[in-house]
Length: 197
Image 1: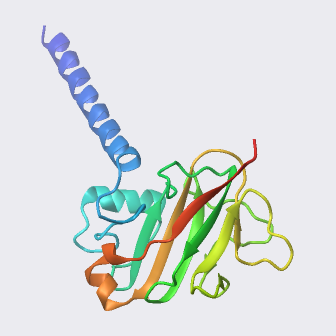
Image 2: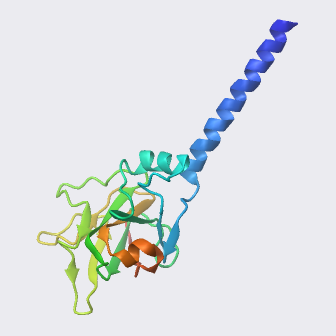
Image 3: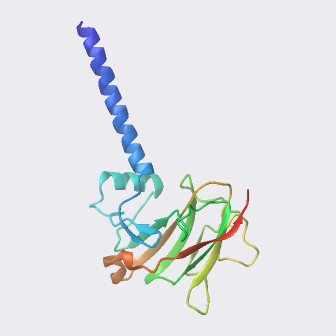
């Protein structure tokens, strides 16, 4: 009698632990992160902070490896274009942004698995150093599934199919952005209509 009760309790505890782990994994990997929005871009205000909750810390450990406090760096992310469509690795996008009020900025593209897209030219991001700024004061570049032509630095090459996420990093952002990150003039992302199959 005691043996059967013990086995049932052990099975119940095992199920409870497995359900708890599964729900935590789903929360960290599938539920949108908390924070504030600037257009389609979201910034988590607790990333890199000593006040970050356990789920934020787990999300950073899985997807970002390292995060600095927002006084040092703001991390804006998106997986949607300006038409609210999911970003796809097989499509071409034009990106335009006014260089943000920060000492340095960059935009990096990540595949659905959270890793960089392979690129023989080793161009994984566009930054204030290699972006081409037009007469309107906007930096413009492409994210496309082809390799960059010779001499074109302001392009991020993608490969494969599936979802994609962009991260905008602002290092040493202006005090006004640190206080109100949602006031960022967000980068514009427009699908160029070309997708490879």
